[in-house]
Amino acid sequence: MQKQTKGQKEKVEKVLREFKAGDLKSSGGKVKSRKQAVAIAMSEAGIPRKAPKEGPHDERRNLTDFLQVLRP
Image 1 (tube, rainbow, N blue to C red):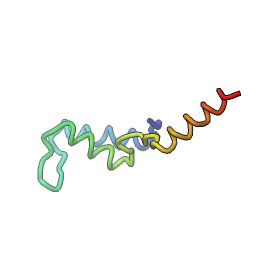
Image 2: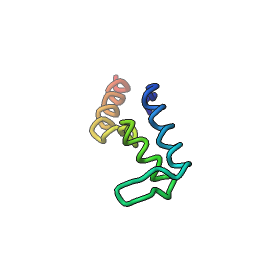
Image 3: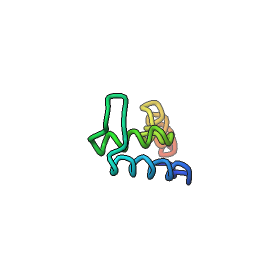
Image 4: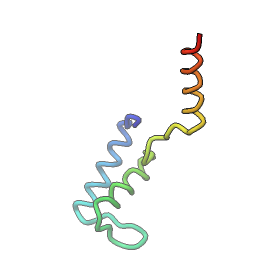
């Protein structure tokens, strides 16, 4: 996962402080779940939720490169 910038860390801290104080609100009202608060914090800070995975095409290419090296 990528490293967070100082601004992103500050944004996450701010949102989680709001959640702990009970002031964090979503479109549906007050946020009650910590997981939801973390999702909101990551969204506002611009942090991707999951790291991009390597696709099957890339895995096949790596395997064929490996096999070509083994062949004499």
